Image 1 (cartoon, each protein chain N blue to C red):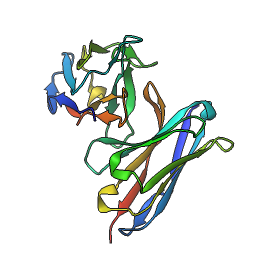
Image 2: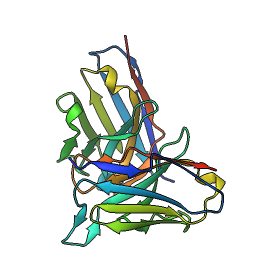
Image 3: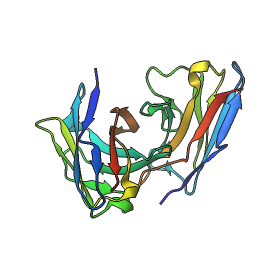
Image 4: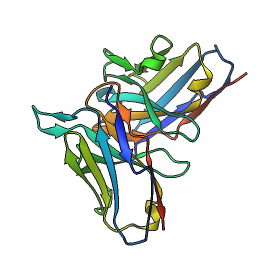
Amino acid sequence: EVQLVESGGGLVQPGGSLRLSCAASGFTFSGSWMSWVRQAPGKGLEWVANIKYDGSDKYYVDSVKGRFTISRDNAKDSLSLQMNSLRAEDTAIYYCARAQFGFDYWGQGTLVTVSS
Amino acid sequence: DIVMTQSPDSLAVSLGERATINCKSSQSVLYTSNNKNFLAWYQQKSRQPPKLLIYWASTRESGVPDRFSGSGSGTDFTLTISSLQAEDVAVYYCQQYYSTPITFGQGTRLEIK
């Protein structure tokens, strides 16, 4: 059974940092592109970042470039998102997803709230 | 960036009737070298993550009921639910994966009339 389990969300002050993790199982993680997708409360879906199966290529939406870093550890079947200089507009549920033809596997998400 | 625009924003359809959601991209998402449209559709029910329904514009994901179908090419796409069931109440999103940034439509809320 495929599982993606996110963790690391919480309440953080503007300007603060947070690191999200995603534990993968049930598929060949090391052969899969992976992504983070977020959804602000009551809003639509926004792709945040992609990382190639070997970690050699990374892509970001403009609004997080220079602040967020996506990474992976294929030995641990783990995906991460380091988020720095957080802003109120980063408040969202963050989903980990496998990027195949579209996003075919999704986690349940972890909520990040940026507020003072 | 490729802008994805869905219509309508919301839709109410009677049980057993057809539901049609449209999606238009600001530029073509057809990759001519393999003749594939880099377009996917998702269903998101309340308090759940999205679920992939359709990829390559018309290929149904494994396990998705055959009442769901996708069509279109280039810049204009359609998701059709042939006979609406109560469990189809959800928000539906189209998404292009032709180029980064990957972008989604704003969503279409589907309800029972």
